[in-house]
Amino acid sequence: MEKSILVLGGGGTGKTNYGAQLLLRLEAGEGGCKVYEPPTNITPLEDARTRLNNGLAASHTVGTQTTKMVLPIEFNGGRRVRLEWPDYAGERLSELVKLRQGASDWTKDLRSADAWLLFIRHDQMQQGNDILNRPIQDALLRKNFASSSEVVPWSAQAQLVELLQMLLFLGGYERQKHLSKPSLGIALSCYDTLVERERLPDPDTAFKSIAPLVSGFIRSNWNERSRTVFGLSALGKSLSDESRDEDFIDRGPHTQGWVIKPDGEKTQDLTWPLQRLINDTL
Image 1 (cartoon, rainbow, N blue to C red):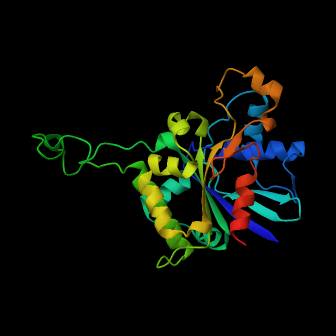
Image 2: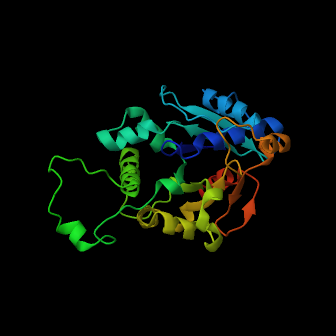
Image 3: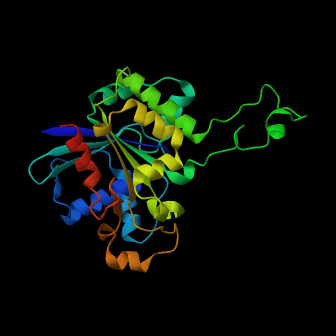
């Protein structure tokens, strides 16, 4: 049985690194999985794979194309998943929020997908100042008010909640009850750089701390069985854009990277999130 998972997330959230590491594992024959048909439009993943093999960070993906990438994976036992990047640079997702409209291909993909895999990077979720955390005289009694024409930027969390609402609308999903489809995986990427992770017992607790608004929205709209939060470090460490990491090369990129499961257990199997999402759709 074939399932489809859409990979979603803004620019710089780690989608490309994760895809490149999956590609390296598939080529190495590790993780109990294989490609069951030729992948589609995976040039960004191949470029990232080359850089990782040279101990360098993957280049930022620029959204010059709209054709989605597809990586078809078959696991031991015959279960198949089409991992699809409908917007691998994250730019079209940003446009959805700005323009309040989505093309027909978004509607088709969102309605046909069995699961969504949403990448969230903790250091992009910094909470700004508001009336609750800055002096009242600063918030309300300033003498020099901003011009009424000044554009006030949305917080990263508010943008992400708006994005999820638009995706649900385009997908035609009923929100008067908790959703069971699509199942939703939250990848807290760059988890190795999260300073507070040692005091946080599990990724869901970390998610509530990092992005309480987004976490609350998801808990209000997805049932517990159909949502999964996990910590992800696709590379296991940070790499430089220019200076080769010889240790990373010697150990082999495909042997590195890890996932923190919802119960706090650590696994080196980067395919675990995909298998979990498949199970959630059964």
